[in-house]
Length: 257
Image (cartoon, rainbow, N blue to C red; front, side, top):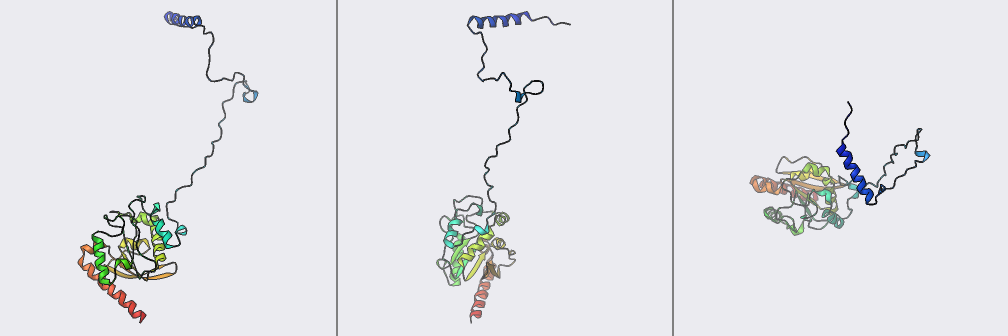
């Protein structure tokens, strides 16, 4: 069945074309140029235009991937440079550089003491809160002061719940080992079992354990204890650590004699 032409539609189209013709518009214009004659090299066998060829993707200069682990070969080789690096290296933690607390002390110190993290109150100096008070009391019992030791932390800023496995995967343990090696102390105390795990030792099961720190040919007597927070909560642990200290220092005295 044939469809009846829509007369109204045709009349509208005719009227519109007539309006434009009376306005002087006789031609159709395009803003974009059009190639009417197809070059032979762009024709198919029937003379039709071939589909456009896809251009090969342009290779952009891709940025090198960001490192995910500290490279031991790129660690600073002297202590001042290491301390500068410590304050800005992004792989040491996940929080940027704001709020980091630098280590304190001089190379060749008789005693280097490493804790897990700074305290929440710390702004410019390490351990300025309750843990710092306990540390000062311990050092006084040892016959020394924090001004006479090298004091550092394994992580550069306070973190209430550090991800120690992630820190180990990022190579924080390599940085700590280099730090100790550059300080080259006569003795080393590590407070916090998580610090010990960074340098490849098992977590201590007792309040104080005597060990040795060995790295890059250097052997340093090592005393490992629970973290300061745990020592504050366990009076017996303090006594155990004190006895370990006496045993440690007495054994060195006997060796020298």
